[in-house]
Image 1 (cartoon, rainbow, N blue to C red):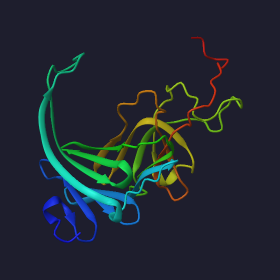
Image 2: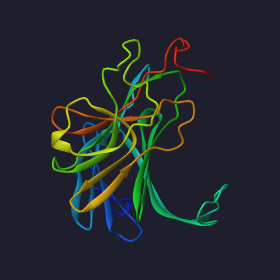
Image 3: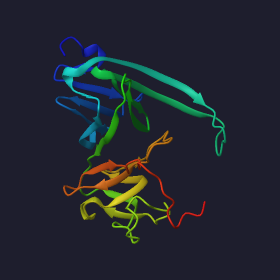
Length: 239
């Protein structure tokens, strides 16, 4: 993207976003698909990881050729929790980068001094189905995970692995020692290269919550149960 350096776009198709204190760097890599990496204090914590949506009935492409515009802004405000536990006021300070792609896809990134957040927005004129959310989180194989892993297959053969009471004890285990396809509900805490990272999600209303899984290459990705076509009452549900 020649001439776009002022908008945070490098000529090789890379978008850089910084935290207000400049300690956290998030790089979006735009080639045939979208990926990202994260550095803290110039140390790469999250290696290049894929990000995107697989859809049916609508073609969404987050690539360099499909990028239409990039905008950025700094937000600094005070939030007042409805039910304050420790503080009646919370500081909310972050830099936001918005990337608009063709076919109505928008990717929004917020980088604060203590964390980052992603969001996809789809402005489509026709009905479509989200087949899969692609969110990888690739860290060093010697990283430690503190997670609530579930039994899979489920002890009750009538239920799938996503049926959980969300009350499993958290175990701390090295990433390279975790069996492939193990599932854990969120939040999950990762210790990597001297930094502690908490993985979670927000604003989940009427939509399946995400779960963490580890693949055969010891990469971390997120998955979610499909929305059922028809609901039936499981035998253990009493309400």
